[in-house]
Amino acid sequence: MTHRACLAGHTAANWACGKGSKLASRVLSDPGSMRFAWLLLLVSTPALADHELVRDLGADPVSYGPGLADRVRETVASVDAVLDAAGKGELKGTFKLVGGTAARGSSVRLPLIINANGLTQGFSFSLDFDEEVLEATGIEEVFHHPSKAAWEYQKFYFDNSNTTPGNAGVDEGFVSGTGVFDFTLVVGLPPDVDSEVVALHFKVKPDAPLGSTELRFVDGASSDSSKRFTVVNDITAKGMALDDPPVEVTPLFTTARLGIVGDISMFIRGDSNGDGRVDLSDAQHTLSFLFLGGETLQCEDAADANDDGTLNVSDPIFVLLYLFLGGARLPEPSLDFGADPTPDTLTCPRPGE
Image (cartoon, rainbow, N blue to C red; front, side):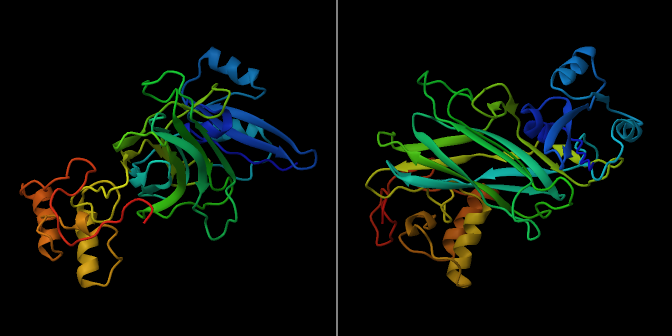
């Protein structure tokens, strides 16, 4: 019999038992009988109630702490590989959902980008959206390591219910997901690189109000329709040895704003790259277009940061002064999506163009 062992904290616990708790998981497989079982390992001093819960799930509890490796080997005769996400060392990571604009009744694709300072082997996310404005339609698996045709484990779920109109939070209108790239090989997202991992697909409701809507990372979305277990926003990275576990971190978040537009051009002043926010990347995007033959501007009006009706180096400089040196506020529309109040010859596509 061949055994695979995987010790993990919040992230892998999500795919094992659905809840980011103080439990970890190990997968045991018997290829001959195709029998699968879960062993949950307590990553903190276990209470008796926790032991009973693990036994109720048909598994064997093993206390976490010094001597863990020996206790695991006493339980399992042969351990091929381990992923332990109990947590040690310093890991920094970010989740970023990229926004944009979409017309009423249209579909939109929003990339989820992960960046950590260590090899990211697994992750989980829990995202809240306004179910009166958007309808989730799918979750697309994007990242694939060159040595892996498919992820070892993934579980995605979304909910569009609107039982209580006006209700906020992840009990209605949410998207959740968990992914582990490999249980036995050290593969994952490259360190210190923005990697698009999944893409979230939504449809804007035909009667959605014009303006913008926010999609936020909020812990606690259900992992499936049973609503029994919830998901936390998490990254697992750095290492794969039983006695030298990787670390687990709650990442920093960049939420997304999606501009809902009608039949006129709407944009945010200074948002040169069209991601729904104004930051350093917008100045870089405009400079690349002007001087390096970079990507064509999606909306010239948005790149016209000083609203003088022309595109030149003064526009990225205006953005940089505003962001970092207390410069003048960007002309309208600057706080939210809106139409250009000043006529000029610059273009900005209308929905569907």
